[in-house]
Image (cartoon, helix red, strand yellow):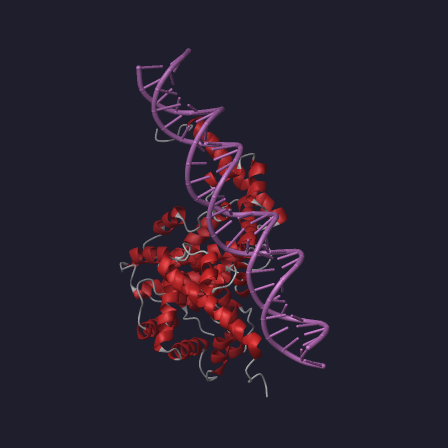
Length: 197
Length: 197
DNA sequence: TCTGAATTGAGAGTAACTCTCAGAATTTAG
DNA sequence: CTAAATTCTGAGAGTTACTCTCAATTCAGA
């Protein structure tokens, strides 16, 4: 009917190649470190030419930094009950999206975070993605409360929650998902209380 | 008496070279764009070899991204009256440090911001610096209220204010300093009110 | 099966760095 | 004031990420 059928040999091969490159990349990064691993090595491991590597991933960084806060998240946020405040809706969105992860996926995600946090180039690019997330969240919050996405208070809210997410970012060894969610909860509660110290 | 005297010919020359490189770099970036300007061009303009360029600036980015939130800011923050809350102290610090700028310095700073915002690599690195600022602010706030810098609420506060600063970052043409300060004021007030939308 | 489109590998080229080394300039000691 | 020790500089070679082009191969649809 739609595009449900097997998408043809060519498409299948492409997906396969892409996955292979990414897996080998992450594996090598974990073992040898990000900067210590060269694109040549990844390409060789995935059995493609360096040129092909760059056809699938515009930069080395992109093997690690697949989009966060992407359409899936947006849909989840929009799907939250209308009576929830933006903060509550975001909290629910994060809970839902993390709950959807399997044990294995969470482990992979933790490893990814470790990599990102320790490689300055990766960390910087991720922080820029979070910065871009401010606009996105402002848009979503604006929809929810019927204000403009350029509304100053809406943007301030978006900035604050993104900042809180940054601050809650795991800095030491792999955390448990539960603990992470609890932290987010506490942080958002603190935020809504006006951040008393 | 201390190191007030002219620091010797060699030191003077070094400072001069460094300044020359930076000025030419910023000038060329403004005219041709950041990525379009090569280190060779900068080195040639500043009349040094490319090798020397890298002796003064470890990366091309560092000609633009001199430290923000550096010791000066820290001193200013610590110098605020003890009765101010961390948020109030930060507000005062920002006001003070901006007020210290001359008209020309502000113009330069605006231009710098424009460059950073439009070059993804620069923007990413700056966001990473802001991320690092979370730790710094957490430390300063902790001192002020007599809590631990690892205290969760302290970190949440630091994350939130950094996020607010990000959100208030000028996205369009050069703003006036006054407007910028007003924005910060409003944002912090909104934050302390619990971010009602 | 044949034709057109997409994918691939190979090779050359650019730009940001890094490292090493020899020569020049500056500081310091005598 | 001069000689030795220190520091700085330019030059050159090398690495790596990434770009571009071209010819050969592979797949899709008629």
